[in-house]
Every structure is written in structure tokens, then in C-alpha cells.
Amino acid sequence: MAVADQPQAIQRFDARDFTHLSEDMKTAFDRDGILVLDGLVPGDMCNALKARTMEMVEGFNADDHSSVFSSVSEAHASDEYFMSSGHTTRFFFEEGAFDSAGALTKPKELALNKIGHAMHDIDPVYDRFSRQPAFKEIAEGLGHQSPLLLQTMYIFKQPHIGGEVKCHQDSTYLWTEPQTCLAFWVAIEDATLENGCLWGIPGGHKGHERPKERFKRSDENPNKGAHEMIDPSPFDESGKVALEAPKGTVLVFNGLFPHLSAANTSDKSRHAYTLHLIDGAAHYPDNNWLQRPADMPLKGF
Ligand SMILES: O=C(O)CCC(=O)C(=O)O
Image (cartoon, rainbow, N blue to C red):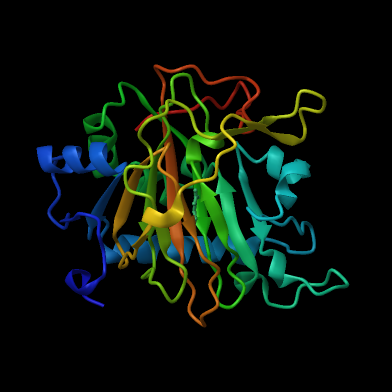
């Protein structure tokens, strides 16, 4: 579908020749909490990341780990494999990929929910993709004094079983004081209404300095995750808009921007890459779920 034909209420920018953030882009980001940059990442870079990811999946032995990631059941929060994944590359399955006896019903490449969370500091292809000059320009242009690459994920949103992602704010998971989380979500394949594109609430980042809840390491057992409720009122999803994204489009959003995605019931996958930055000028608490060992500190661009 042509970008101009999409039923979007949100401002979009043609970023095929991007060199720097314009004032209009900064205004849109401040107003909406999100910046939609069509064509920022060339198709061949998307293809290279996808090919590298499929090689990594090929090398993963699915018999070793069967960890599930689900924003609905929160199965991962009590899972050591997830809670210790901040410095390495780990593989997480879709809940719907298993039968009632716990056996995988699909080949691993069609059963994974995502991989994460430090490929940008481990793998040369991810390093290049994550440290592309445009991302640095955007982070600095949006006010990061010392951007640090905290988390990368490759999200598969598999055909038929790609799970729903509940409305949330990324600062819930990547907390700093003050809040500085900045997300880059890149469509590695076309993301449409049919295959479970993102939705977001424009302006939903405004009026509060903290997200509605915080996911952190439990005080009782630091190997498990725990939610701390800050504001129990539900998100007002009446103003949500679809964020359809052709391959190569980058959605840059504030860590307080509420967003979600529906289940993918179609027969098409919807691969996406995400990078989360924080500002090194802010405090990163020791009880955040995502931690790095002392010999692998966070790095910038
Ligand atoms: O790609 C998706 O469907 C959701 C991703 C997301 O919300 C996130 O990573 O914060």
C-alpha cells in the first residue's frame, strides 16, 4: 500500500535522503511522542539484518532452551534465561508455538517470538545496523547528551501465532532517572494492519514524568522480575492510531509513548528490529531488570 493511501492521523516524513533532524521533525516528536521516518533504512540493510538473524537462528539449538516471551502472560518474568539476557543473545518462543504436552509444533524459525538483548555489542552486522550515523544524529537531535545503546531485539511476529503486545511504555522496562529511554523500531518487512503493525496513542507521552508502571528486579528475589504500579488507571486507547510501516520505515518514539500491537493471525510474518537508547547523563538503577556485567559496559555510537 502506498504510504499516502494509509489511514494515518499521524505525520509522516520521507526520510530516504535523511541527513539531519528538521525543526518539523522535532516538533512532531515533541507533539506526538513519535516520529515516523519512511525509507530511512535502505532495503538492502534490512535484508542483511534479516539474513544474519536467520543464520543466528539456524545456529540455535531449540532443544537447549524453550523460554517463552509473552507480554500477556508475562511467562518470561520468572525466567532466569530472560532475566540474565542483557549482555548476550537469547532466543524466546511464542506461547502459541507449543502443544499441550509442551512440544514445539513448528520449525524454530517459525516459532520464535524474538531474540535479544545485546546483539549490537556482539555481532558485527547488528553493530553496523545499530550504529548507523542517522540513528546517532536523531538521538542527539532529540536531546540525548551521551546516547548509550542499551537493548536490541529482533521481533519475528510470526504468521498465525505472533502474539498480541499489550499497551505499554518502554520506560517501564528501561527506567532511568529522569526518564530518557528512546526507542527505534525498524520495519524489516512491511508492517500492515493485516500482519499486526504497531499502534500508538499520539500525545500519550505527555502529562506525566514517569510511566504507569515499572518492571524491575524483585526485592525478594533479584533473579525474578516484578511490577511496581505507579498509576493504575488504564491507557485511554480511544485515540490510538495504526502505525503501518513499509520495509525500511523507522518509528522513533519517546519511552513514555504508549503503544501496542495486535496478534498476527495472517499468513505473513512481520519482522522488526528495535534499538533502545538511554542517556548516559541519567541514573540507571541497579535493580533494573536489564543489567550488564562490569566487564561489558554500555557503549555509545
Ligand atoms: O513489535 C511489536 O509488535 C511490539 C514491540 C514493542 O512494543 C516493544 O518492543 O516495546
